[in-house]
Image: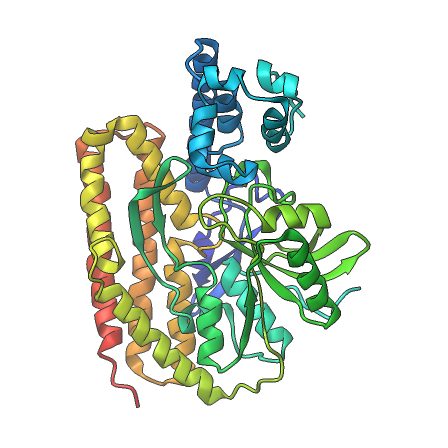
Amino acid sequence: MKKEDVPQDLSSLGKLTNEVCYATDSSGKYVTALSRGWDVKISALDTAWDEVTIRIEAARQKVLNNEASPLLFFMEKGLMDVQILAGYTGYWQWQVKRHLKPNVFKKLTAKQLKRYADVFNVTIDDLKTMNVHEA
Amino acid sequence: MKLNFEHLQSAHCENGVTRSLLKNIGVNGITEPLALGIGYGLFFVYLPFLKINNGPVIAFRPMPGLIFNRVCKALDIPVIRKKFSSKEKAEAFLNQCLDEGHPVGCQVGVYYLPYFPREYRFHFNAHNLIVYGREGDNYLVSDPVMEYTTSLSSYELERVRFAKGTLAPNGQIYYPKPGSIVTPDQIKQGIKHGIQKNANIMLQSVVPIVGIKGIRYTGNRIKSWRDKLGLKKAGLYLAQLVRMQEEIGTGGGGFRYIYAAFLQEAYEYHPVDELMEISKLFTESGDLWRTSAVQAAGIYKNRLGSQEDFNTMGDYLLEIAELERKAFTALKNIKWQ
């Protein structure tokens, strides 16, 4: 990549900081150049986020249909999977998987619910009702 | 308390941390490309069975921590590296290091990193930053991908140091032991060693998902993604590939440009003409990776989507594999003086 070809498409990161790129100058020698972002990367990130939105919506529907507990909704919203959620709550993965079932979730004690609520940074009531206060 | 420390921006976090921490103990000659090259950090692996953000892992760098360790080993600098199960002990050790005057590298997760834009905050745990001081409850942070220094409260720092999920950092902390004197000859030997090791890793993998074979394998797999996964999921996988390859830290083209820069710098230590020629091959490879990213973008933006388009995408990777096979074979066959 030549220095003058370093893309300068403003990304969300570019608003905060430029990125260092390695590119060649007119003599072919490598120098560093700053980039504000690249369209191809921006759209890759957008694609990932579109998918996140779809997954959250699908999770919400599943919870409403009583196919999953509200934990699924918050897990997707936090971009987590069972492994990550287990890590943050300190539960085993098989326990988290069990808690994702609506019937098991209903029997969780306040203490158990609090562990999840703390990780998702919501109250226990909000956890049960899928209530989200957008910051 | 603020240690005397100079913030340097880099393309890749671990190269940057390596360069800055070494510079801090008086080892000045290690630039970012030299760190990547001596640490034989050019890599490729495709892990279809390991998922990050619901897509396959396609990594262009070795496991976090390796580049730093290898560079220090090549230069005979002892490394202090620790992991913790207790958050309290992790913080106590960090404070102790700072009190003794060592800026330290930390492996962190980016999901809770407050100075990153929200769009970039996925559960990705292989980021590295340097802590170089403390003021009240705030730690002073030099993150090599940022243009300027930042700070984190003790709570924020603890949260990112104990991020969970794949490659959980477990509070990992490291720094080079000061007091070593590095001679140009050590750097020279390190360059040679790094090139030979990197060529071996990329050329002689026994598993089909690593190195040149891995690139070829991925290229062939991509051709079947459309039928196997459906257009939508295939697009997501390609977006994942592009993010791993081009996102902050790679210097563009999946580190190929940084490696090309490394070979140019290597020439100053080893005046072997081939190095300059091979450097051009890596530039070519970096350009091809980027061209393939544009093709991938066409697919995940739904501008392209026929089997023909997937074949083109896969063929780019086959072409890259062939180009890099040539480049690494040439590196392997260099007659060192």
